[in-house]
Length: 445
Image (tube, rainbow, N blue to C red; front, side):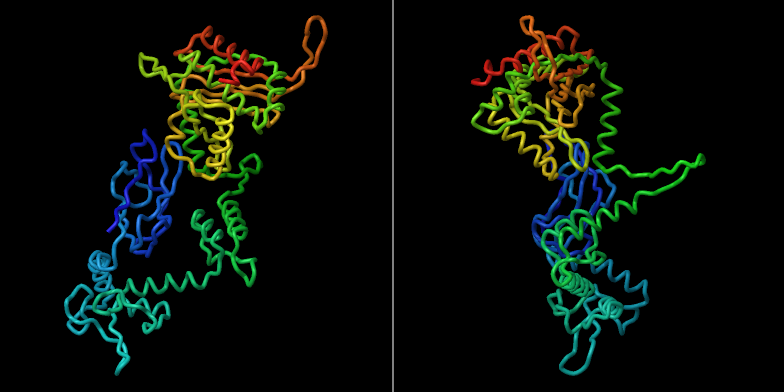
């Protein structure tokens, strides 16, 4: 018997909420198959089966469960019979079946009812016969799961599940997406060869379902509007942003940075990188020089970190995520470029772990690709500062009496004034500006 417990997805995780059971109680499940979805304060995740067997659910949807607490178990067929016979007997009694000495109940030691005559007699319980009749199942085709060869209700359910899998022709990608999105493949029209369901069919069904959830209405002034339910991640983000706005005493400083040398360096490097990677490398080194910015305010104490776990804001279909590059101050531009691609990819695929989302010490957010010149980011508590970067734009500047066109970029530092004063924030921003305008000073480091 295998135990399914609430997983600990990160160092700070204490509990998780069961948002959806993908499999039902009593289903036959296989090792590695997704059983349920859970939600924490930072992300949603899937829990998979630890072995093959029959699922016995202990905690229902909607419950918040402590880390390591058992939420389900994977039973062998014999164990499942011991768990289910009592329940099945009650169901038989309630329906009038199994009452009286001529029709023994499934948890009795007496012989079960026999279907058929002669050499083809089939040993079957009343509940299994009832289900078989309702679903038009030939009991001769059902494989018994009990050691004495008796066909019980669970054996019929397993047969029906297998029949359903065989009837629905779908590609592995389509099945995976359907399971992930909670889409019933029976309700999806296949457009592949010979009517086979492909991934695109499931995605279209998912989009159609989302549109159905959204509701169009008209208010008393004749204005049409639509109610759209927030995703789980959006709900978490909304709560967190409200907490940030209510807690922090924000101040924002903006500096204009000449990107001439950083642009020249980026073009001359023997490997492909991005401005975000260059900025992340610069910020990591600047934070080492200003540890008071790489910190957390805890009551009357400021905890300064010697390690820079740099959070990078990533836009995903589910919402904004801020995974961290660990020990960024120790990494080269090449390493940070690789790490940046890795966390961005995992964020969009929903494969981040809890530590990546909860162990950040400072955040960098870049909206330059959207044409934004400058903006005021919100501090991501428990951090005490965040740097927002805008678009690179051309500007004429006075260079030794001549007007020269230079690529420039605005860097906006928002910090918690309870932890950092204006001069401290200004000194950090000045260091970032210096490193961006003279990138070769740190490139070899």
